[in-house]
Image (tube, rainbow, N blue to C red; front, top):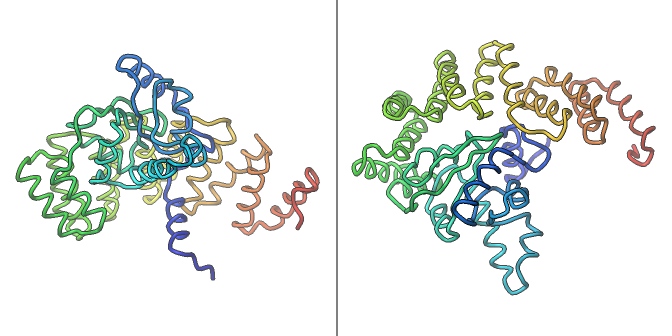
Length: 362
């Protein structure tokens, strides 16, 4: 029996649930082009993005400043007596993108660094938060796995943000009180509405959560709201209703891979394998890959993450044929072993040893 520490267990869970993403740093061309245009017109600005995106962004967008780069690079930029500042920037960057909500700390980060633009992973919980706060953020475009927003207002700590902070701390009763206060002040507060629906869902009050989401959609027909409603239906096993909502979401935001994958998951649960196959393939096509082998492995990972390793195997085999590098071959060995195809795994190891005698010792 393998027992994982809480930290390792959380990482494994995150890896299992994440989208298949590029094995190279992201370079969304349309997003970079839009940012170049924005900054040429408005002047240099800090663009808040996760660490991977912050590596490539300054190279492609000359006037974009980033909060933090890779850890060693960020440390090298600051002198010895300002390493605390370098560390704080890395922590602020991590905390902003690790949280599924806009919290008091998120607002402080936006204000402290005078953030002009934010790049999120599209379809994520954080991405939804920015979409549902149009008083502060203006959506500009989706490209590959990312969305670009301009900070168009002055983000502030409101009752809704306090409710989000309480939810992040799992203080559900306190969060509910803050959301009720926010809705008393403004019944069209989208973040407060979604927060209230989330608490109702967590408490098993699915009818109330559904009603809140449907009322919100009636006034604000956004793909992200249909996506959340689809997730609510899926949690209750209402597959047809879930499929209908996910389909609206992915048609409304066709560049968001996460919406295609969500619909594919429900199709798979409903035994519609052809539907799932098409949607997973489309999701892989929506991202940029350094080569065809990487794209094949990404599509294979989608199946493998869902326990469909046999369906994934042909993609891994084709990737190894396309590009027989060490990584692709080791992945194929692990898949053969996982499926109990030990003879094939051993043959592959022997072939690798012949190609590179120093590579393997056992």
